[in-house]
Amino acid sequence: MLKLENLSLWFGDDQIIRDVSFEVTDAELVCLLGPSGCGKTTTLRLIAGFEKPEAGTITMGDQVVSSAGYAVDPQQRDVGFLFQDYALFPHLTVAENIAYGLSGRSKQEVKEWTWEMLHQIRMTDHADKYPHELSGGQQQRVALARARAPRPRLLLLDEPFSGLDTSLRGKLRRETRDILKDRGVTAIMVTHDPEEAMLMADRIVLMRDGRVVQTGTPEELYTNPVDAFTAEFFCDVNHLDGIVDGDWIKTDAGLIPNQNYPDGTEVDVLIRPEAVTIGSEAFDKALSQEVRVCAVDYAGGASHIRLGLGETPEPATHIQARYPGPFRAAVGDRVQLNIDQSQTLVFPKQDNA
Ligand SMILES: Nc1ncnc2c1ncn2[C@@H]1O[C@H](COP(=O)(O)OP(=O)(O)O)[C@@H](O)[C@H]1O
Ligand SMILES: [Mg+2]
Image (tube, rainbow, N blue to C red; front, side, top):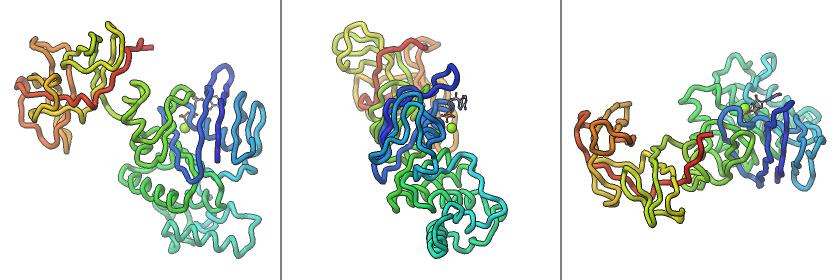
């Protein structure tokens, strides 16, 4: 349905988009994810036709809509937008806001389509209200309905929940995903929040510094990240220095099987917090040892425990563990640390460029 191939874009001397390629299939919800400033909004603007690429092409259906120095007008792309600072027209009612993009349709159609949208967002009772009479969540629902009312073949959403508080955001994420999936809407949603992308996306396109780093389902990116950046983007991880010695990687936490790195390679071993358990049965004798509790912080719901590896009074290496509920141990106590080897990730050490 949509294909981006080798897109590049400069703003002045800065290359903002670098050789970006990905595809979106019919009825798919794709999240463009990445840290602030990595080029997500710019990519969305390229897809919408607000920017012309310097190189590469964008194809919608079987029509090339953008190529070097060329872009079909946004109005002619049949694309709906919900941009970050979506503003409803303050002087128009909810129904009028939704109907805004339907000019040119018959009166009957405008009425029907607007009503259908109001129904979908469960706001038929609010049709005649003005935006200032609505809560933040209701305004966001109306903005989504306005973007969808003309039934565009592609919907572009740029951080649509960023202005909402946490509890409302969670609710609207689910609701928005349900609406889009129920109606088979093809959509690209930009977010810098990995949790949001994991919850909502069929597929994630992860970006960094104007490039696509990895594309895949949320599960693929989480379980099989291409590099340490990707792994760390999804959750806090523990880092251990490792060095390859034959079939094993030596770390301060024990021996991890070597997956085909040459002898002597320095590696970065990443361990997710959920791979670390304290005091229970050992998963694996090689990665089980007695360690010292260095700090305990109880942060509502879970304790965060800092464990020191090694015998010296000042351990050189620490591992961060989580424990459900309050953790009954004092600093200085010795506890059994277990690491689930299947949840460790190994990457060749990179220069901290
Ligand atoms: N019109 C512009 N002129 C110059 N630089 C821009 C312009 N728009 C965005 N940028 C720069 O391009 C980079 C990517 O921006 P953007 O796509 O908005 O990132 P994101 O949405 O991922 O936060 C940023 O460094 C930003 O400062
Ligand atoms: Mg942005």
